[in-house]
Structure formats: structure tokens, C-alpha cells
Image (tube, rainbow, N blue to C red; front, top):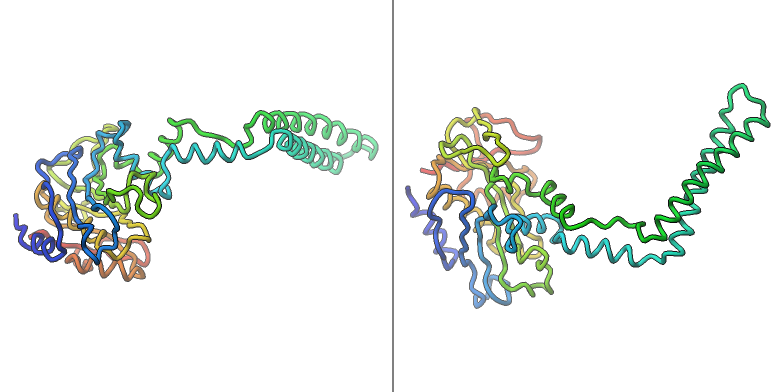
Length: 319
């Protein structure tokens, strides 16, 4: 496989390369040093930024790279930080005042139920309708007020998740496909967790990440959930489809997104049978279009693959 153009790109970016990828397996993890802290143009005060291929086998371990990606996508907030914020909000309420508010809400619900009952009494006389409404107010309002008052006084006004629930929510929302190796992830880590006042500490220093899928490949295997990857007949050859590219706004235009693309291409060339890279991009995202064109992608005019409205399908052949 030809890697000369890739090597030229790496050298032109003044990149310090680390270990290369060796075998094709979703759990392989590598780290490549990209930016020297002494380079005046990179804008990073200390340390390096490393590109890692996310290892799904770390899920549930101390170095859980999958959850680190989920935390980055969860507004840079880890499960631990989510729980801490919920607990702090719960603790901020005075129990007595919360109980009073709960009682008021319960009585309000009861009053609404009583009024609706009284106004919709059908053929009952007015006195009977009012009596029925009062009974419903007393029953529904009293019970609801008691429940809400007790709930708030007990400190349950704000729900606080446990760790398993928080991790599961982030997994389902952000990294379900990454966890089962349906997607292959790459992430850019800043070594200095104090960077930008610890902004990225909750995701262990991730400042950008991207996912991709190896499609129509002889290397595709049964997923963790027992499902085989689906075929993509509109592009019959083996290819890597890139998606979910994101770099934090505070560190954009520093070469991180481009290096994530370079890392995917290096992996695709050296570890897979992919014949091309593909992606979908919004036409109004001029910066992204320029990035992909700079990496050698062109808008597809042959496969006629359907895309979302306002988007273009771009490809790069791996000759």
C-alpha cells in the first residue's frame, strides 16, 4: 500500500510520529504525539496532543476510553460530574421550603381536579356538582400534597442517578456503536489536564474525536450483540465511512481535525482492505468542506448515493 502521500502530509505538518498501527482489531490502542509544546503556532501551553485509537475493551475499566469519548460528547461532563451536579442541586434546596412548595403544588392539582369535576357534572344539580368537586379536591389535593411534600422534604425533589445509571445513559446516548465495535473511534487527547483551567478534565483531556465504520469488508465480524454489520450495496467495495467529527470550539483551526483524518487514513491503509474513504458533509459547513477537500476528498458524482437534504457525499480513493 502506498503511504508516501501520507508521510509527506505528516512531515509538512511538523508532526512527531509515535508507534504505528500493527494488526486489525477493534481493541488495538495506539498513541501518536502530534504537537510539540515549543511550537509557537500550535497554541498549546504545555505538553502534547496525542491521537489514540479508542480501545473498546477498556469499557468499564479505570482507563475507560469509550466513556471518555462519551463524556466529551456530553458537554465535557463525566458520569461522576453529572452525579455531583445533581447532588449539589438537591442539596441547595431547603427541606422545609421544598416541602411547603410541594404541598402547594399538590393542593393546586387538587383544586384543578375539583373545578373540572364541578363544571362537568352532567345532569347533577349544582349543589351536587359542587359537593363532588369539593370531595375530589380533598381527595386528590390532599393525597398529592402529602406525597409531594414528603418527597421534597426527604430531599428527592431533584433526582440523582447512581453510577451505573449515569454510565448507561451516556453509553446509550453517545457511544453505543463504539462500545460494541460497530464503530471505530479516534480521539485527540491533551496531556496537560490543567489546560484551559481544567476544561477537559472530565473527559480525560479529549479535545476532539471522530468515528468511522469499516463497511463491506472481509474483516467484518459478528458484533457484540450478535448482529452482523449490514451491507452497503450502493458502494460495493470495502470502504471506511467517517462520521461524528467534532473538535472543541476552543481549539479549532490548530490542525487537530486534519490529524484525526490522517490517523483514520493511516489505519484504513495499513490495517483494512478498504479501497476508499467516504463521508457526508453539510454544504453550508464551509470549514468542514475545506478540511475534507484538503485531505483529498472530492464530491461523489458516480455512486449516486442518497444523502440528507443540504448535504454532499464525498469520497477519497485509496490508490
